[in-house]
Length: 116
View (spheres, rainbow, N blue to C red):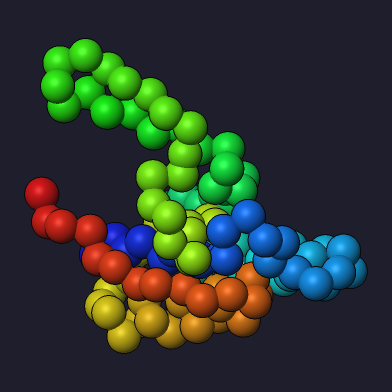
């Protein structure tokens, strides 16, 4: 099976849910989805991320390591969390991403990992 990154996108440091009740409902639905991934054998790993302002950018290209407060990108949309799954093909990964999108109430991008 191929591994895929399902990345969840949020809008910078803005709160992804309008109310605490909405947040708790999304967290609960995401927990159910995570359990379904595990039970079906698609689960590899997943994690939610703190807001982009907590990031540290590390640049070691010049020999000397330079760190700066993040985020690296000034884009409106930022990575908010992710799943790494195994699926037989892209269609199956997209179907799982659709379920994940419904659960977390956000956009999900699907990308396959490169073959080793």
